[in-house]
Image (cartoon, rainbow, N blue to C red; front, side, top):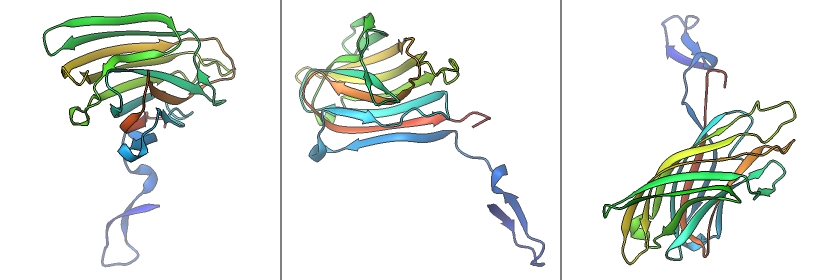
Amino acid sequence: DKFLVSDASDSGNLKYVENQYLGGGTLVQTAKVFYESTQSTDNVTLVNAFTDDYDHYVMFCALTPSTNAVQLNMRFKNNAGTQVSGSNYDYASRYFNSDGGLGSSTWSGQDKIVLTESLSNNPTDSPFVGTLWFNINRNHSSTGNMGAFNCHGQYHVVEINNNRRNRAYYHASFYRDSLTNFKAKDIKLYLSSGNFEQANVRMYGVKDSNS
């Protein structure tokens, strides 16, 4: 429980710092998923991604589908283990293509969040690489309402193996509901068809001064 700073000639005069006063990292890993081609799966679920310890989270992810030109979706599961698919997801994405084109993808009242509508399945492309930030309001109410679930992020996509167009996304989304006694717990990423050939995803809680 102590970190030794120096060893004085007098064995009873050791200099140390107690563990409680040592600094530490800001990010604390809460969940991770790693799949290789021999472990393909139809979804990537980060179990216990959200805890009672943090309000803010960051996800780093790299994903490759086994099927070309598939859609990448996101939902979350509550603390009862139920996948939440009610029509309360809203999302808005602005994207810029490497060929000069640009556009938007915006929907409200959906049963999922669509991160991108088309992914290449070429593993040399690193088809989806991105960072997503999440906010969970742990103090929404004394009854534990699911309440506010917010996400924003930036990610890079390679679309459709045959044209290999790069697309950069700027994304924001949220879920709103009045369900009581449920909290956001797991994050699920899944495809419109086929499996993930590779997946490397990490979720971290962001410590604050009271964590």
